[in-house]
Length: 518
Image 1: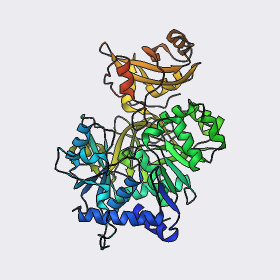
Image 2: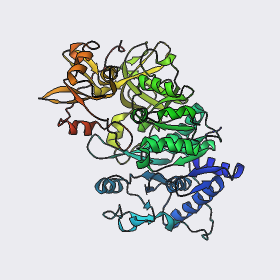
Image 3: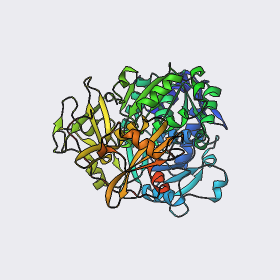
């Protein structure tokens, strides 16, 4: 399949398979022909509302058919869609709107008519239904030049303010088609979107499914936080593919219904957004041995994901979950702290990414963009500095070690919080663990938050940990918790863990090591 744009792929499916189901939520479902018609209608409505190519269109919409149509309509007229989280505080939503200055904010035609997320800014609030007019003259839609931006995703910024990651249409198409090819998605695919649509992890399920001509199933994000809703949807809708974070997998594995996956239609699970646990994946295979599990990796700044690796038990024998190899057109470069390129097996360096999936930059922040999009590291290439520590194994696959700011040095010893977390998860009676740094009287402390069966005390766990870890790596505090809380994006909520324990975070100096962990 050529790398045509997402909205053009939908139009082609509307011709070749007009009645095939394209997208559905609890309220409605659209075939490809109906989807294409509504996308065109909404695109014309956006133009009539004064949206011009290149302008931003903010989407204050939940996981729904409306969001999919609005995103595709924005793409069709060459506008830039900006997802807004309906669950975010009003102040954050207002701050994003003020920063990206959208031409319009599209929201749902419900009680939100009296609760505008843009009331304090100049952006025009338009309700989704008000953009639809089936009697509007079907004029010619503008040509969409290549090289234009497609969407902007706002992530938490190191300065304390959200930063908008601007992704170009060409990078978007490359990432989507690489995902289709890696997973083997086709018209028979039925996909459940678990992640919230304001998080680009959801794009790995939403848009590849539509490009492949499959069927996308959307459910309220809040409902899917309950495992029983996830399992009911998988069975009731004949889901064949889904993707989510490793933290969400832990939530599912803790459910009594996890065994039902063995008799379900589910064929493919893709994990991403965090480091995956080899033990959790093995547990998943114990209940669903025929399930194909993929590990995918990619910062938001490199467009959704830049690697997909199908995992096997043999691949996990060394206790790590490899990232695999980059997508076609994407390049990886390992650089040490002296700026030297590393090529040998086992040499750990910071990962820089180049090629077709690089972001266009941070919206309205050229200095911040220049600090991470570097043209002085790899000759002849612009590369993105990820902040991730990676090495290559003996099969030339890339393996994630940890974030550079999560590899610390205490007592002269390098400590990866990920490595420590894996060790804590191996302890008897432990079903989950997370290790987080905190301010320990001005020093860098390590707190291990452990989910256990409550038959064992923190003293028991510390004694067992001493049989696996050197004294220098032992956590300063072990906290027993009932669960590992997740953020709205499905990742581990470290801030909430520290807050509940009465701890505060402390910055740690990153350590770039010279060799892989043994």
